[in-house]
Length: 117
Image (tube, rainbow, N blue to C red; front, side):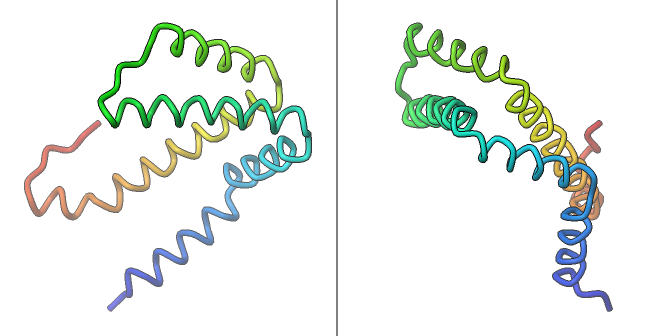
């Protein structure tokens, strides 16, 4: 009988060797080696985290905070490497979502959940 943990580790190794992960890692390394790009991305992510925390606490997000977040987003989108990194992160996230659907398919079949498309 196959051990799910062994297969999960095997999947992790395959992901680590994938084109998507390699591109993501290379872009991540490029951003981290560029002090300005790293600071820009860190600032953007800090704004994101602050807004998410406010939302989770049920606090109202002001129009000023929304505009600040939008300006930060536009700023990082103008940086070519950061923009490519964010696109790569999105593709990796989509890949993980699709893999998760495959992994949870037996449970959906068992409990009669309607397949999502």
